[in-house]
Amino acid sequence: MNILLLGSGGREHALAWKLSQSKHLTRLFIAPGNAGTGQLGTNLPVPATDFMGIRAAVLQHNIGMVVVGPEDPLVHGIHDFFLSDPILQKIPVIGPARQAAMLEGSKDFAKRFMVRHGIPTARYRTFTAETLSEGIDFLSTLSPPYVLKADGLAAGKGVVICNDYAEAARELHTMLKDRKFGDASASVVIEEFLKGIELSVFVLTDGNSYALLPEAKDYKKAGTGDTGPNTGGMGSVSPVTFASYDFMEKVEQRIIQPTIRGLKQEEIDYRGFIFFGLINVAGDPFVIEYNCRLGDPETEAVLPRLKSDLIELFQATAAGTLGQFTVETDPRCCASVMLVSKGYPGSYEKGKKITGLRSISESIVFHAGTACDPEGNVITSGGRVLAVTSMGTTLREALERSYQNAAMIAFDGKNLREDIGFDLE
Ligand code: AMP
Ligand code: GLY
Image 1 (cartoon, protein in one colour):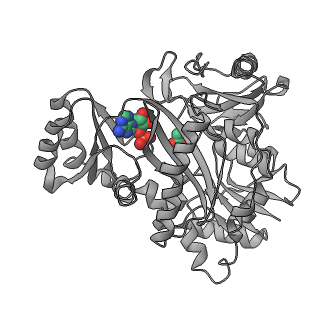
Image 2: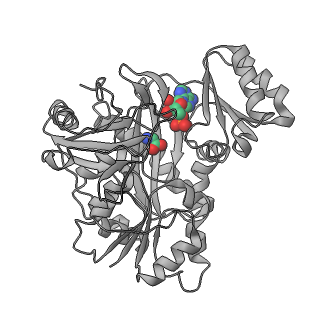
């Protein structure tokens, strides 16, 4: 089968790497891809949100399945676009339809869904510009820190945590009245702050049953010692030591199963990944957020631990037979360390030549923000550049391998966090 994979980051390189190990793959196309995906398949110069461009590519390359990496095309309805087109409607799309993608696309939708189905999450209320003063009153009923979330997609930047009341009230005003995050902050969810340690749990669902994938933890702060601004993620590890059998039983019973049941009860057709952003509060899991896709950089530590054939998993998702599937995982540990451009997550330069990639043999290097220059050199083209990923019998061994290999790669302005996994050993 020919597969078209949408997206261009480290997550998509990891997906491409896993897909290309399947005996069911004939040709892999990636739109738009990066220098790493280009080594595994054919990159097409089509943005992941250009639905007509994707349609043309599907027809031209006889695509039998579309796998969606990022949230944008899903929230904008790529799955619905396929279903409404007489020629495309038989081609499976791995990723939920627009209404189901609202679990990520609207924080208020997600919160209301959780309340309807008794899924543990922080206490909250939603406000608009018209109800700003009620929002300010609500803040006074909470104790600091205050958590303010733009309702819509804000490129991962829509959550603001304030330590004092006056700052939170000002921030609420800026989000609602000045539209700090554009239309995404036309509504703002204010919620109780939960104290605990976070982890990311992933399932693939066909709308009836689900396959649980290995869990992971990502490291969001830019600086070593969990300092500095939030980023898309500076590294990831899997498994997560505190995700014990008992804890994961609670996650399945209190969170995953009610979510799948709730979607079914509400007749929301969901075929794709659900990413549960969870927090462990004194041994009990709570949902911080849902995402309708895999995490990045979590995918880079999760997929190397997946032994099952990914295309077979996707075929079962499309056919509604996931319930009969047993997911096989590798018990070893995986650690992924992100190499980023100087300045990230603020402004940074692109186009820096990357050297040392060919000397890496013990790690897998997933490309995140890379491109090829006209001479065929791999150059930087994003803030997050490469995810250096290794397996080990212990987390320490996996981390050491990744750090040793990360040191062999060079580009002007290369930065990394020195302490990925520090809290889990
Ligand atoms: P999100 O964009 O929803 O992933 O939120 C970004 C980060 O804000 C999360 O990864 C958490 O670290 C933090 N966060 C969000 N909601 C809460 C909450 N209710 N309590 C504590 N931290 C939170
Ligand atoms: N690493 C978090 C995310 O992908 O949203």
